[in-house]
Length: 392
Image 1 (spheres, rainbow, N blue to C red):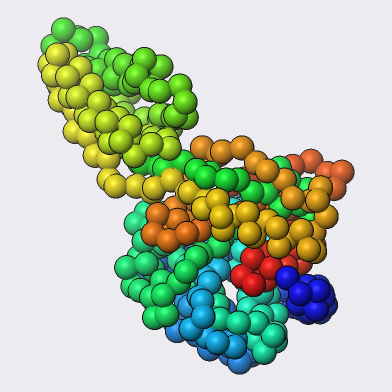
Image 2 (image 1 turned 90 degrees about the vertical axis):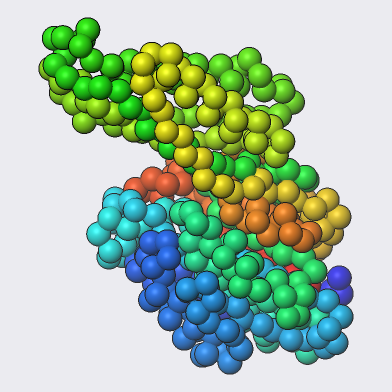
């Protein structure tokens, strides 16, 4: 990469950083849930208009695609992606920019992603006479909730007209200190399926168990048996997680209910094993329930695919990042059992998904998806530079 290009990115990103920080704080104070990012989308459009960056709005409800065109616009097309939605969490913070929306919070850092992408769009738009090709900036709804916003955006054609050659995304990471960038070659984040079980029996008085078919007892046997799918069947080289986090039985100390509802998640990195597990879950649930006189309805809607980082694209991006980042700032990370609907992009075209360090130096980690999550604001500057270098 030409030294002048790197210098331009360093200079322009420093200049736009205060604006990007304001953008992030506004977005953090005004979070919106999945598929309801209406004001968020309008705010992004206003920023793009302010800097005279062309865009198309209302894609897959609230999605936006902005475009910066350099020299030889048909030479290549690169996409950068940020997600827009927040989580149903009540913020516990005394920050001036704390959420003003009761029960809703940007606890997963999507406000940071949007601020970094807007900052990168502004910088690259300033540099368009110095770069070649076309850059798309994808602002995507509903990463946190299925149906996936990524899948909806792809179906709406965001990877076409012009055809996108590769797509790059990133995610804040509180385990990494501010100023560090994380990467991984190959499969990086797990697929994710939601599991919904309805165990049906015959309710009645808890003092007369001989007259009922106990769905709670059936559920206990099912949950224990399901854990053996991983411990007795999974390939040790294929990381797999099967967990259940919600079990609801509307009974009482002396009432056995008619049914029990259970919710869980399945995470893995092998599509054939993933499908096989679906079949095993159904067989075990129905078999145990029937054997104990009840029934079990199983619903496993199609979830998110795993995120796969193209090695060539990732190596190229990491090499270029080292023109403005120090060697020790670039960190190779292990796979993560968390999921990301960025996987839909990576299953379609070459892609890489990076991690942005946000931890404040010498302060405790504030974990994602918690009521007190926050970042070192300077990480926004590094995120802007990451997006700019990666695109070029």
